[in-house]
Image 1 (tube, rainbow, N blue to C red):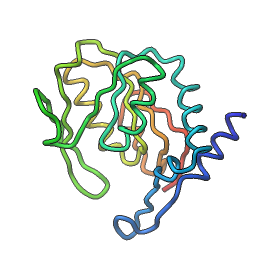
Image 2: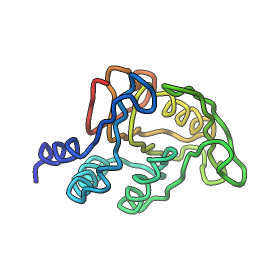
Image 3: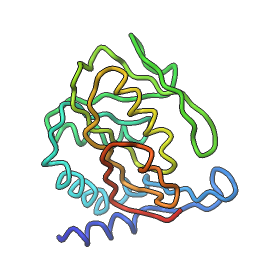
Image 4: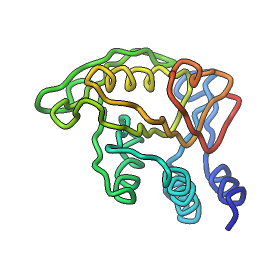
Length: 178
């Protein structure tokens, strides 16, 4: 199957919910992709084709949908996976970074015992919107000496210009204006 066919299958499986969680927001839901096996296979193929040339030591998944994608990627690459979670969810020594969302504020945490200076990291999440959570993840990883190779997202809301704030390479498979 051609790449464009896989992208179309993926895009067709993503559901949009207007006015959720607030009026004026269109929520792009990736969970329908996990329900549709053909779409999930297309997503897996697209991800693997893209990352096969990346040199990474560690896959980082952002809370919470990055947790669905990160382990799949790490198994294919033969590299470990670590989560970045919301405050208070991780044991052990953690470092924190506050950030602003489209509709609120939060704090990310990362377990620092597993990352060494110069660790090459791939960050994975479902969506890039304003770039708030991704920027926080990048700052968090850089604060412990990691080198962010790329941010990989399934969907990007291009009108919000989140990628312009990141300062690292970004790859998205499906783009929406809003």
